[in-house]
Image (cartoon, rainbow, N blue to C red; front, side, top):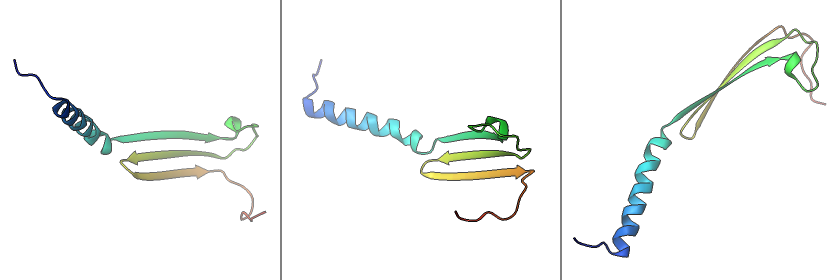
Length: 78
């Protein structure tokens, strides 16, 4: 049986790590959040609702927001 050298073992380990990382680079993770006044801290009586979806694919982040029931005028910087 042929024994491996330290150099061959290191090269095999580097190759294994590289091959394991390839699928992770293209992996997609999806996160969702329901937006309600009752889940705010502190909670409030707002009738507004919304939903957010965040999708991460590799190094790309896509954000999708939908909301309804907002009241008041235009927001202003404080």
